[in-house]
Image (cartoon, rainbow, N blue to C red; front, side):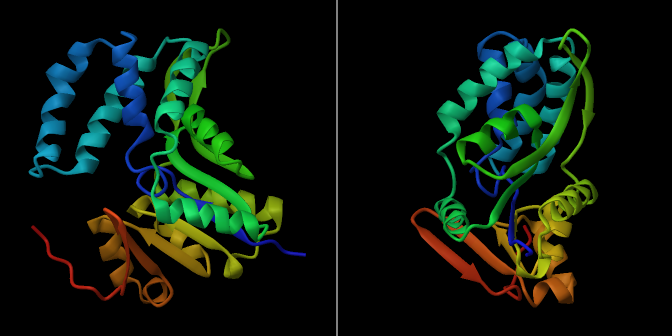
Length: 243
């Protein structure tokens, strides 16, 4: 008998920010990463976004580049300890809507699957916290001494997320027509399009444009926007104001 799957992105879909950013900040606090990296490089891009002149994705990509470079040579055991602290502090800072959907899927016996572009050691701990069936994140490779090599098998693009879904579908005999997916950026586009019940959570501009340009997805997607203490469900044809 086929099963129903529920595929969740994490950053921006479940968690209200980026776990990698929180981990980066903790690494600076524990002096694993030199604070000068933030002050001399990333802070300007962050300020541009914080003041709504820049783009969050630009800030995140710049931070991610330094994050990967600075982790090279560091032992995974040390990183795992700091990652545990990040989840302990931030693991409950999630959207009400997404948390309620996780509970609903569990009550209905669905396969709960996290597919995230975040580092595997953070995704793993978030998956444990929410007791999901299985997870897939970006793999940060280690050498024979368990030190990071600086190489990453990425999971933040639409193509790789689709490959991960294909594996889960085969493993758990998932009926995609009955299944659900939740995402917020274009990296989640294929994940949304593959299932019968796609839900875009606070979609960014690029994802919203992709939805509007794809008739098949536009006809079946639900768009959820959560702000303050209100959850809105929007029509895919909603007008978009570009600034």
